Length: 460
Image (cartoon, rainbow, N blue to C red; front, side, top):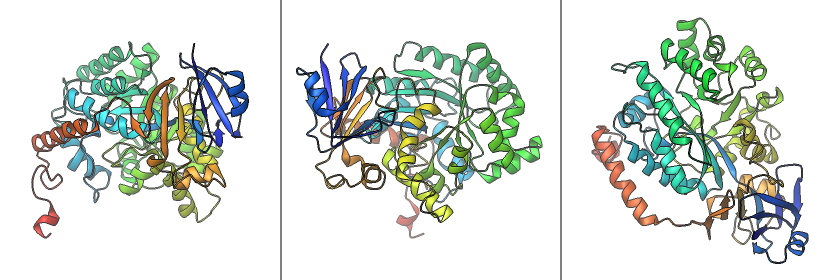
C-alpha cells in the first residue's frame, strides 16, 4: 500500500507522542496511521512515500465538533436579539415545520464545506425538525456521507407542542435514522432527546427503553438556560439534570450540550454518571445563555468537548471561532488569565471531543493504529508564519484561512484550502434558492430578507 507523510514545523499529536518539533505523521492508503515522529526519520523509513508539507506548517489531528444541528444549514444570520426560547419561535420552529430531507442534505453539504475547511473531520449532529413524516433528519446522513465526513447523527425528538403526532411517529424516525446509518462506515447513530422539558413522559420513557433494548447512546441538551431550570423545578420538583437522572436517561452513554446552569448536585451527577458535556461558547454568548463552568467540570473528571452548536445559533461552523471563544470566555468570566489555557482548549477540540463521543480509540490524536483524520495548517500565511508557541498561535491566531490540507480516514478532502470535488458557486446558488424557499414557506417575515423587508430597511 502507498504511504502518505504529512510534515510540519510541529506535529501536535494530542496523544502520548506530545508535541514534536519538525514532526510528521505517516498513514497508509487504507486510512490507518502507521507512525508518528520526526519527519526526517519517517521519510527515511518510507522512501517511496508521498510527502505533503514543506516543514513550515503545523500537523494535528482533525477537530471534533462535539455538538451542532445540521438542520440549520439554510437558516443562518437571524434572531440575534432573541434569547433561546424566543429564538425557537422566531427562527427554528417556522423553518422546522417546512424543511425537507433534501433541504437538510443540501444544508449539510454546505456546512460540511465550512467544517472541513476549518479543520473539522468529525461532527456530532442533532437534527431537529417538526416536519414529521418527512424523515428530514436522514438528510444529515445523506449530506455527510456525500462529503466523506465522520460523524454521529441523532434526531432531536420533542413532542410537547400543539398538534404533535403520537409518540409512534417520533420513534419511527429514530428507527429509520438508525437503519439509514447502519450502512455508513464513518457515521454512527445516537438517540436524540431534543430537550428534557420538550418531551412527553410517554416519548421519554419509550426512548429510554429503546436505548436499553438496542444499546443506543444519547445526544441531548441539559441546563442550557436559567428559565429551563425554573420551569423544571415547577413541573418536576427538580432541575433538568436531576430529572433526567430520575427518569433513567443518565444510566446510558450520554453527551449533553451546554450544561451551563449546574448546581453542585448537578456537577456531582454529571461526574458520577460519566455524562459528557459539549461546550458551545459562541452560541451561548449570542443567545445570552450563560457561561458553562468548564474548568470545574474538568476538575471533577467530566469529559468535555467543544462544539460550534447549530449554524443558526452560531451563524457559522467555524471551529477556530469556537476554540478561541472557549479560552477567552473563561478568562474574562473568571478575570483570571490562567482560567483556560491554549493547550487545554486544543485538547478539548481534539482528543477531549473524541473521548466525549466515545471515539477516542479511533480519532482525536495522532497515534499509530488510529484512523488518519489529519489536518495540515499553512505555515506560510500571515497567521502562522511565526510560531513562538504553536498551541497559542493556533488558538488565538489561526482562522479557516490557515487550513491547507485535510484528510478524513486517509482520504484527501481539502487541498490548497478548498474542498475537493465541490463546485462552490453551484452549491452556493442551490443553497440560496432553497433558503429563499424555506423562509417564504415558513413565513419568516421580519427575520429573513428573502421573506420581506427587514427592520433596518423600514427605518425601525
